[in-house]
Image 1 (cartoon, helix red, strand yellow):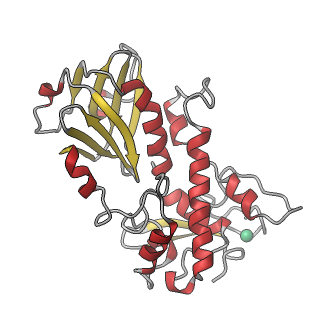
Image 2: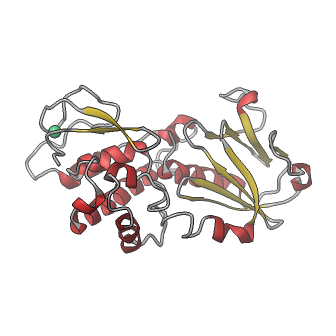
Image 3: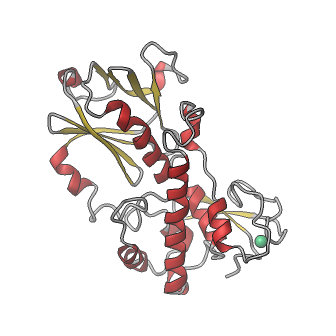
Length: 287
Ligand SMILES: [Zn+2]
């Protein structure tokens, strides 16, 4: 399940392989756009915003993809065997030395690059939790606009903050000792601010650890871009002298298993219209 950190890692992995290179081939099976016209066009920039990947091309057109639950981006050497079926391919871009393939993404769109500022702008999306210019004050104002919404639902609302997904939502509420079931208005502003700052820190940590070159042996494994670890948040919030716990994930997917901090059984509930699973410790995250 890709979240903002996954998209930033994908951008980090694809940018050095694609930027400045000319498209030798491109396939977008379900697109109406005349993609063959893009052969010979250069890739100008690869970047992430929230959960979107943006590939800006030299002709004033950008490719926008959103992976939702099951989408993936892989980078291969030309001629290498793909790890997913060709039928699942939604985009294939080939430049010198690299074939970048997006599988199973439900959103694949060509847009005018000059329209990106509006499409990814504040009317549609909150500040990117991993963006360089992320403004915690703006994020808090946007969260405050849904006072009656449970925290676990508000954190997933991309119009409030872009980039947070289901795993980090449960994890950061646990590390901040806040209940995802609590309505936003019942959480003190200072606690909400700590939560948002902690979320940014732990997601930044996950991007940095998996940056190409951070561990050159592993960064070719496509699944590597999709792993997560919230131990940094545990270190930040565990009192000195106490054991940090096992990690790398503390509550997500651990229903019925003992909390690493207090031993109580982790509980799973479903929240929001989309009935997204939320995991929490009923003792550590009272309220
Ligand atoms: Zn607990």
